[in-house]
Length: 311
Length: 251
Image (tube, rainbow over the protein chains, first blue to last red):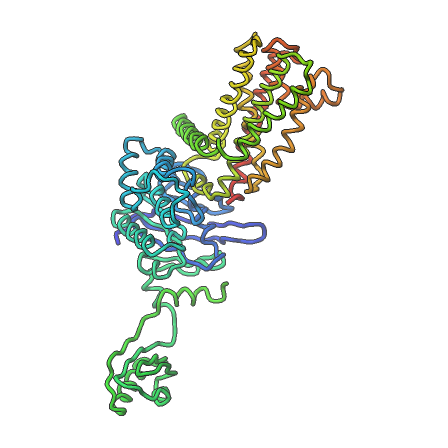
């Protein structure tokens, strides 16, 4: 990862809807060249935050600066710096894919001669060249989402906002979008991404922020976040034969055992004692250990631990 | 805002207008409320006024056509875009809400003027003498801006079903047609009718149309022009301000 100065600077951002505080004085920054994942359960305030960052919704308090431009005071230059793929957005179904692209180019002030070349490049990269003169009405969901991504990238923005970009898409479109995001980031684009997909966040993001009930609950790299949660360690062990799990469970350092046919999931209160117990148990039973793994916590577990109790 | 920024926003308004023209001119509500209803209303009016003069009928046709066509496109756009989920994309683009509203007004204006030229042609074909073509043209342009802005204003409530907005706009548009001197000249209305008529922008355009084809007009022509321009400015300003408030509620 190559990160530079601050691309997005958020300070005490707040949004209320009536008596409900949807986003409650959140502060964070995203550095240039970073892929920042913004995670949270439904209703935690993710989409409201993205809408404030992209200038769609006006905050009640706090500031957002995008590449140095205040989104409230200087919305036009701030929006010119970003490409946006909103969660619920659609392309114009009555226009063709190419016409939608041209519309985006005109709105972002891309000169027509430059736009024509960019559109052909983007359509080819997104696998839509063959369908460019067809009305979007006939596109699949994956094709529409790829088109929207293309529209967001036409003006080559330094920052890209994506709200649930792969939600409900087929594997082919998901892979294509993720690969494209990785290429864009390698070329220097800063990416702000909200997602429910922990694998995606783990695979793509340099840092993730977790929002819970409108407040930032954690911000760090996925690796560091995984280290923060305390849990009973898990040991996955494979024997060359069926073993008595009750006997294994009774040994020092072991809290419980599940599994059959020689493949066991061992919950350990003390991982060192538990591994010694497993080895001794194997010797005493005349069994060979075929595999032994101590998997680290996943980002899913981190997320569930931080957002425990949310619907 | 600097002049360069204003020019940039105006250019984006034209982009929005082109998009609207491509998409919304052929939408069902626009065709029904903008073309079919005024056509049948005029037929009924003509049959019911067999003894009215041709210039009187033509000026009424002009007023109805411009009013219905120019107010047909703009009420549809915001709710349609919200329902089709294309509005958030526009809200995130580097275009201000006033520029967005102005683009919609431009598209509606072109529709209104274009369709209104048809009855102007009919008038010529029927031998009606347009004695003041420059006044008529100015009236059509000002009226188109005014009625397009009124249409945009009618779409301010953040209802995302176009049919709800069309229903609301019909509730306002039809009474205006009856008190604006199209069917009954303003000077023939009772006092209360005349008091309401002066509050309707359509009254002033109807008066301009009457004057242009040599019929009796109720107000001085300069007053008609100023009133129409004043209504246009007011509607446009209020529509831009209120849409900025209600747009986030549509998302």
